Image (tube, rainbow, N blue to C red):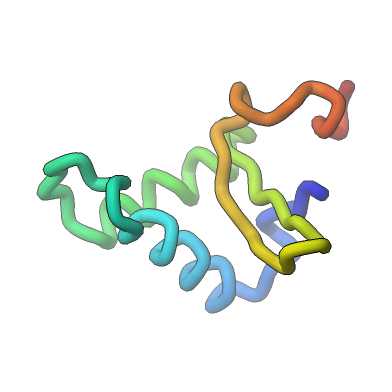
Length: 77
């Protein structure tokens, strides 16, 4: 299920993004400050280049690049 980013509380969205950008393997040696990485993800969400997916079975959220989301899950398909 896709969750519109603008329907999340601002603090919840920030924590979700921070969790994503600080996970092991996501920085790949990138020394970019956390605030900048969070801003980039926010911009990608605002542009529709990234989406928030929620799995009701596992109760887990994840961020994905739009091009990695199966077409049938996209709302405009």
